[in-house]
Image 1 (tube, rainbow, N blue to C red):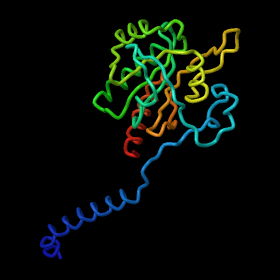
Image 2: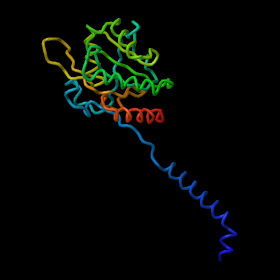
Image 3: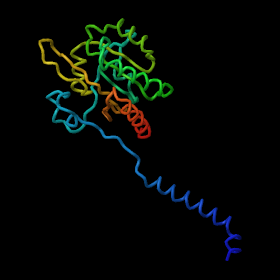
Image 4: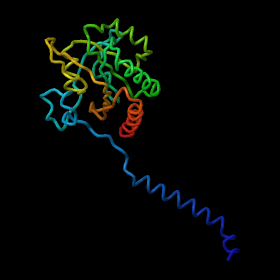
Length: 222
């Protein structure tokens, strides 16, 4: 009996390895690829959604826009055509959560600096303060890569509407000032079809890692 097993030991090892390869291959074929949820306004806290959209459960996409970046250049939705991007809202004089959020955006920029499919977009919620010159100064201080990351300013109403009706990332500030905004810490992941595919706490390192993982899932989906 021992002679029999000794004689066919090599064949047995080959058969075992081959079986493992076949089983693994079958598992990979049958295993469903992970997919990210497509978010709709009804999935969000009503505080960050314009009242006209709180009931919407399908077909939500980011609206067209025309804003000005840190270099004084017009930035529109066409700059993000066929791109996956991460959007947020901030202001340059913020001393609370904004520095943490910006540092995490810098981290994302650095980790994906060779990835031309992924871009970043940060909107100021104080356009009357954050001029082009102010945004440029901030961009230089933070090491913003102009080819990958736009910091944008523009008409306050347009930014307000984008924040409340497209990205769903700011709270309304009900005071005497029209279109007042209180930005959240949210980073919003947008796919190549301009749909929201993820919301992340931009101050939480673990959430940033999850965001980076989800970007890879979206890339495979594309």
